Image 1 (cartoon, each protein chain N blue to C red):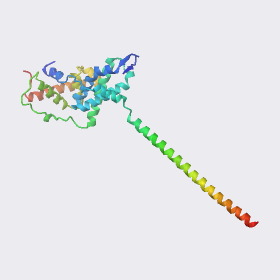
Image 2: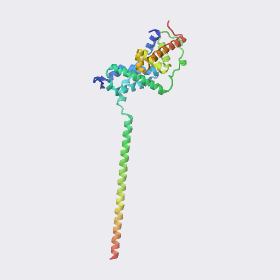
Image 3: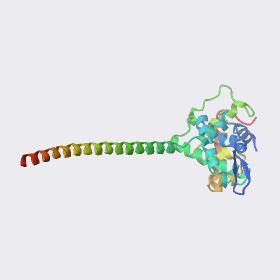
Image 4: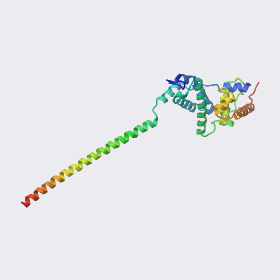
Length: 172
Length: 87
């Protein structure tokens, strides 16, 4: 499946899918904590890309476009689901063994804690640590002020640190 | 990056979607939109309904013609009978 881009170059849709599907799926999955819904949203995002392929200039442009659409669709899906993440902060189970930095158990605990954050800080944290974007890029992707992004990230980190310390997890 | 940010980057690393993702997207691209199927059904139903209406009209027309032919024949016979009586 090859389409002509805005600058008349041939872009292989299959190649774009292979290159960007993990990014699109992971944004939705980390945000929604629902694998099936994330898969469906990722499909929707690529369907949109296929319809708009003529407006895409390069693979990098496709990546930027896909990330923006994935963020918006994930937020829309969360609002449609009209309830907070399935795991409330108080419901995050206390591990029987306290995970230490570098422990795979800690990764699971962090993902569950991230899932309990409100929409905007949750997405900001995902774009910061999954996508390695700086606050300016996050502000541009989410369409919110830079100051808001910075304060959401700082507050979320402080909250996570506090929750982890309460669970006995911290720097050795 | 401190230890927590390092852990977050590892915990939120990108993951691939389930196998067959590309095929699922391609299948949806080639699927005919639902509205198109609905529109095709409506057009077919309207067409069938119009054909049935025309057929019914033809049948009614034939019946009227037959009735008029019978009535005309009878009138002719009555007229001829009346002429015979006058003579």
